[in-house]
Length: 125
Image (cartoon, rainbow, N blue to C red; front, side, top):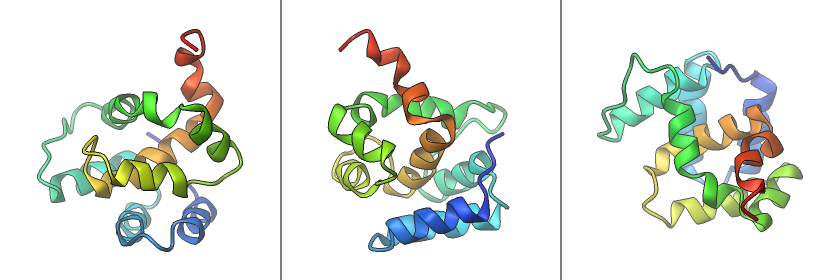
């Protein structure tokens, strides 16, 4: 279970305030008391997805699906600086995952640590 704090939610809210999808996702995360997995499953169901409720690693699998994009050097550098809008914008424009799930995925990556999350790709670059 990955729990984010109200401060982390507020930080994402301020950095992604121009994106209604992000605001809706952040409201759901707040409603789930910061539990990213619960919020992501709820949002996925609203988006017509059928996540595996019993699979506690569902959000991790979703994030790994986006790893090649998120860990591109330009996005990685932005994420390390706490800037999420460039990768958010890119993911909005791709059919990689439902738009409403971008925010929980990015929050999950941030909670894991960008370098730690991208480590499996480091040997490939």
